[in-house]
Length: 139
Image 1 (cartoon, helix red, strand yellow):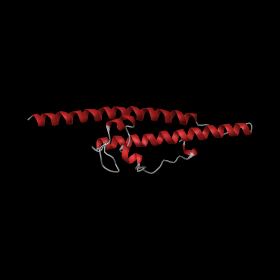
Image 2 (cartoon, one colour):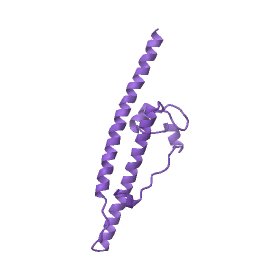
Image 3 (cartoon, one colour):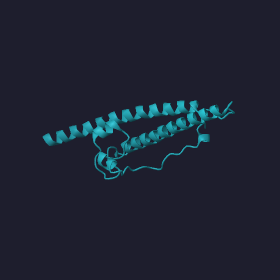
């Protein structure tokens, strides 16, 4: 009887812990979505700059903004995948070796798909990389 009670308590703690991760994932998702919305508004619209320095400055700003936008959009994709894994009961399971991902790693990167050992071996499973077209950024 004691073992059964202990098992149920442990199971309940895991559910509670995952709810903490769900809340964190949702907060991170909102943060990245807000950043993407701001970045899209800040992208310079193509116009005829006054001189070559203006062209260079606008081009450099656009490249930095596009890089940040791509990184933030990729984070959104990873967070949404993590939420899907959470709903499917696969959260905290390494997609490479199927071992349990440590809580410490999940606290550091709650959307991670790999355990620290597989990540260290360079076996990071990645989906198709996100590529942005500069012309679509204003869509």
